[in-house]
Image (cartoon, rainbow, N blue to C red; front, side, top):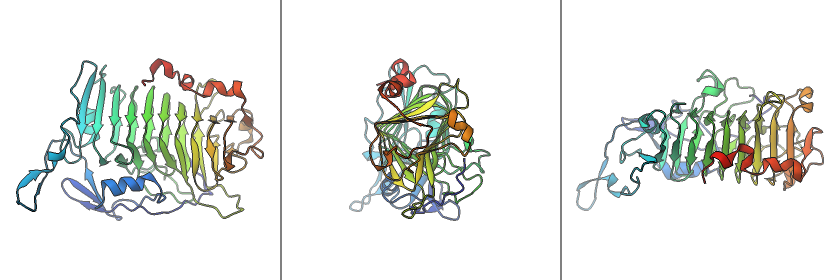
Length: 396
């Protein structure tokens, strides 16, 4: 999806490059620039994980790195400090896989751990990912249900790649991580697309951080970093809790049925001059194409902030459905709040609702006429996990 009037901010967090057998350092000539606001948690990831600019290339074999003590010149393993209890023992219902970029586990890439999970396993397969940026494209195939990615914190552990709609032959295939399996869970980990921020009117520059296409997926304390089309919430029932989601244009899009609770939605769209009516971004672009589609996005107890002058949503498809409830909004939200994708016929079919939101951006006085101010009865179906049938599948 394009927003041709947009000029995006370039606030720089630069990765550098230099290739070696096990280490990939980033060189602007071979790796594209990606920019984030300096307050963004991604800069914490960069500072904590790659203070010298190093990102490890994917390998799957087990190996140990060594260093020398300055005092005794003895060669010791850097894995000596690796916690012995990092990987719990397997049980009848749970198997564990360990990923560490320094070779202190059985796997140094996330994809190799996914590949090791048995086909159609009925057990919960927890892939423990140690701190680091894992520069690889990861796919969880439909035949690999019941997988959990568990990182060490969304500012400490991340999976990153740099495909675009152009390089991947379509936006849908550009995701750094693509999940087609059901019952996928992610905890305390970030998903990043570090392709260049698109300029106004760029063709094929959409760059997805993660595509979620399996049913019954949950994300707890995760980060999602990109610009245009960051989070492809494609299809199925999904739950997002305590997540940080950052982007510029349509940065949460798709036709899933998803509940977002206590999430931070951060726009990095281009700032506008005071008094300007230019629109530089949008939070959502929901793709409900028929009144019979039981899909939609519900945001409850969230916050919307950042930069730009943006819409809460655009009607990517005629029956687009999005609700914001009990959410705080800064003044970056344009007074009209929403956009019908420049197709007035969609005004009669979209479902855009707001309920008891707060902040300067929540003023509904000048909202588009098709936006609904929901009452207690109307909003009740969107406020909790019953919206996604979570009482039937969502694990505590």
